[in-house]
Image (cartoon, rainbow over all chains, first blue to last red; front, side, top):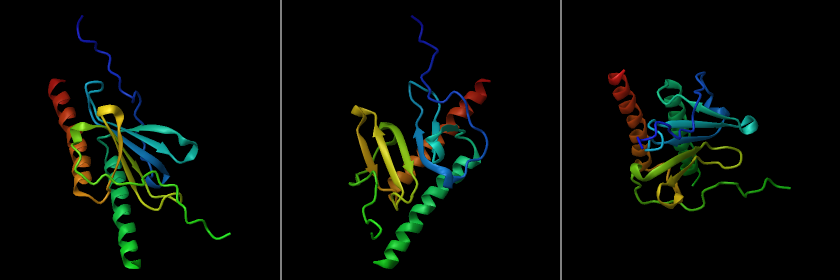
Length: 83
Length: 83
């Protein structure tokens, strides 16, 4: 039986408009695997928990990752100043 | 009633040892919010779906994010060559 061409990707449609990092409840990154040959990035929005597949190649996603990482160091610096 | 000090963070314990990006099934990034004052990064492992909280400040996490992003562009370059 030839290897089945169907993949089990979670994302069928990509939401191509920019997403505001502040509107995000959660971001899921799913590395490429035997089940799905491409990386998938799924955003869960704060409003009604809507899930959107984002384009891993887009600048918007890179900025979102940076914003979340920056937010992380900002908070820990503030905590250090308090300690 | 004074503002409750209890937060609803998902992560109680941080897994501090390095994680191999290839052993990851999924990575969840949860931005800081009113429920939890710090960013949380939760890795779901391929083996038995174990979930681990990673240290958002650690170099390992930064490398994991880079590895997944790099993997993304590697795949799309290969697809472009085929097209």
